Length: 161
Ligand SMILES: [Zn+2]
Image 1 (tube, rainbow, N blue to C red):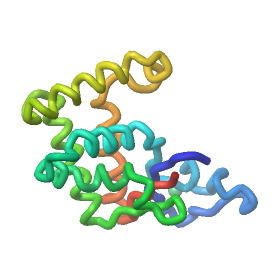
Image 2 (cartoon, helix red, strand yellow):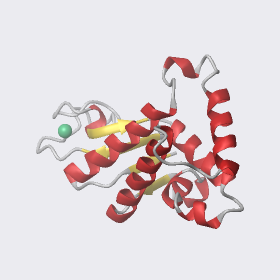
Image 3 (tube, rainbow, N blue to C red):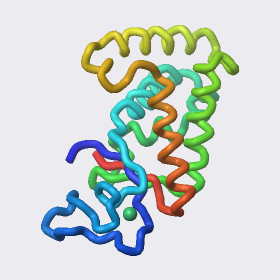
């Protein structure tokens, strides 16, 4: 299966078409019975970079608590982690802050901004990534859509390694 991030749907007919295929089709038509789902690898890259850049800066580290947590495997139990509604709302604020920084409306201190920009400039040069990621903005927006699905359904944001 690999890494996955999902919010389950609430459809009354959320039933597997074939119970022997737990990741197969659902009667309601949602893939894997998910209201929203995505491969979270790039979001984990964001979290790991934030963890690295803020190692010596507890103030900024605290501002990205959820990002750092979801990106570190030590926080998973049986390769699984779910966000509480409070954590989900915090994560959304963290994503919005990064979007504001990307839009030039907010700024990291220079000591963070410079390595942040450098990392992503290199990151998106990789031809393999250019197929599904060209900038940090769509990666962050995908995170927002997951948070919105969680608010809409009342179901948690779930991560699988
Ligand atoms: Zn459904």
